[in-house]
Length: 374
Image 1 (cartoon, rainbow, N blue to C red):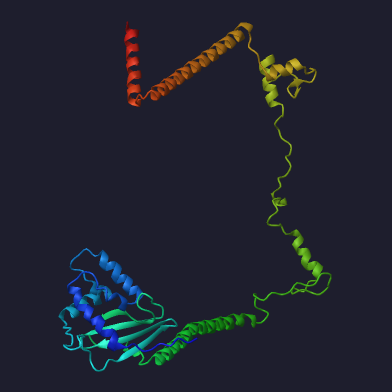
Image 2: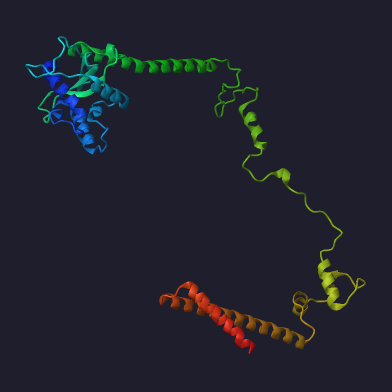
């Protein structure tokens, strides 16, 4: 269902608005008669911000303009203007001609603009289909602007609501075409890229980039080099794979004969034990060929023993005493550390500070030094 929107009745909308403007220099709060004339969002802005203002220089008149720079100029214009009511009707007189222009922002937003050159202001209205607080559907003030000459956006406004709707549709079509134009340019660039790369597909077969299919298995067709299939693939049998860690070329040749005897170390040890020299008979693995190795001889080589029993027991006794002394010292140190920690926890539980505890321990240590001197 199409909503019927009537043009704004400027003769009934403008006089109440103009009558409220001079009151901005008298009262810091907007008059109650002004709020129903405003759009819901502008009404909330003026009602809330004017009540929160604590400065006497701030005026609710500036809240009618969303731009801070224009709001200051608007206040100057209203301060110098004269709004005299008619002596008979008591209302502010308006010019005979009040042209109204329209602009369709979207499907739900329709604006109307009324210019008042006599007062150098422009009133911007907004159609509000649901405004119970303002008295139902109607035109409400969306913004009050200073008029200092022809606006730059005059050509975007239409003289009727129908013309504004048609102009909005044309703008939508134009914007859609502008959005699709980059897509077409991108498609052309993509086609150019396809043509560029297609040149390589049309290159003759001698180009290295063109791959030659491998011959089918079992066929005797000659390959590109004139070899048969079996001969061609047999060439790869002698190739060393890259992942194979075994390389036959790295194998070392077997160790040849050597002039060194394998029993050199054994003969040296034998010489120290038996007191033999190099003039003895030839040996095998450290033994003379006529000797039969025994377990006792092997133990003598591997584990030499001290020459006397008394010297061995003395060493063992000293080692045991050193071990006992070390264990005792560790135990005493652990006991002292544990005792200090226990005393600190006890002092902390009673509320004694750490500094006082440290001072007490230091005092006791000093007393120990005095007692030792005595």
